Image 1 (cartoon, one colour):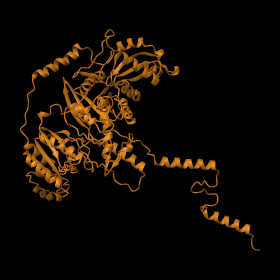
Image 2 (cartoon, rainbow, N blue to C red):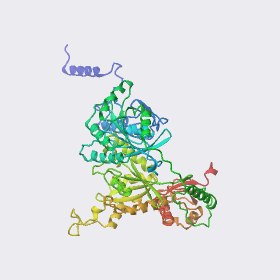
Image 3 (cartoon, rainbow, N blue to C red):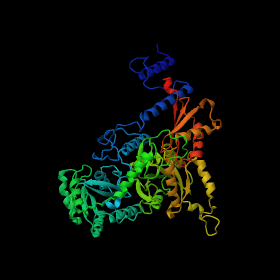
Length: 634
């Protein structure tokens, strides 16, 4: 008997269902979760769980700060190997992976790579820049991407210059020191020279390189031994031969003995001293230094006057004997005066040291005038200035001596959002800018007056505030807001000129957490208001290192009416006494009845009261809580 139509449909349905099930049987779970046979509400829940699982799989399991062991290229970078300049240079580009990554994961990985590379770069140091005229200078020059910065890092035993496969990374002049055969020599790394290039950035690089070549006593020209001679090499060789200074041709990238014979092909440039080297593998470096050192002028040793050392000893004895107890702690309660650190004297910050200079980091967004401000402060063309955002790559430093004070100004690269940086060199520049900020004493936060305070300005100011740096807000390009047109009533764009008080209030409203920072209006391109910057920097640096005696702090504590503090009762603590534990930044220890974290309103109220009495202009104030009965309870 033939089956009915309904039975045929059911048999066909069963047959299709059985073919899609796994071989384990009807009760086996399906390989993937299906959303076809569930309710719409359940379907949304399953889809949300699946999306969350996909996102979690793409999220890195460790943060860049905690990831201390990363493999870059063919080299294992661990915490023990970081900072050794004698090892192989690390390429800026990570090695290719077999599994392609999505753009977001690739971006995160590149930032982790940049942070790992930044740990090996050396920050600006103060040694060797106080008396530059006593040491001879050797300049390194050449066309882009021939290994000049690699040679500079090799000779100075640092990672001062950023090294990578991207041409034109180095733009400004970078200085360092080399010790060889018992003699110290200053070294300057210049940007890649292309004499005939009319573009703005290459032309400025050439101008900066010419400054370094003119003041040098000897010159090392670097060429790439693995490529043919290029037109920029020939043109640069002609310029150097006309200068009359001793020039040494370093044929770089001669990594194997079989390649040494190819270095003789470069003698047609006209140089007598041709030396094959490998800056990456430190081959031939000793022969190069021997040749260069032999051509330098005789060493001049100046006799230091005995009066300077005698005065220093008398000053030290005065601090130890007549200046009271140098150790931090409670002082005479009747002494109401504030101790202020004087330039060149002992400062107290978790210990005792002598401050020889004040480091000032110039920070801000790209193209707000940081390099122009550095040139105005130093009275020179130390940094390249152009309307192109992101011109500065390496940090540029310069020392200025004024009235017995030594100021080291450090021009950092513009800090931008992570999504705005594409090249690895730009990522390294942003990371190194934050590192230079954390190593400085004072930060000059530069704001473009025409654009006002942007969200990036607030973020950058937050970096300085949280790291404990003293801050001075610089409103640059103020001339664009005040210079009126021919009618004398309106600006060139047709708007009325800005009022300084109203503008300052707008900046204060946008940067409320920097209410303690002085604000200055300058025009760096015309050097207007620069004198006020020096005065404020000196004042802020002195206030940063100021110490208040414990007796004065306790008398101040008795006068405070804590009932005015808008703090919830559950968050209130009783302060028995307080003392200043450290300077730079000023740090106070509060001895309280409970071991709890101070409420932010309580900290703000106490910091405002301290500023009204003891000032601490331009410096953040930190608090640490220590319960009096904590040890007893334990």
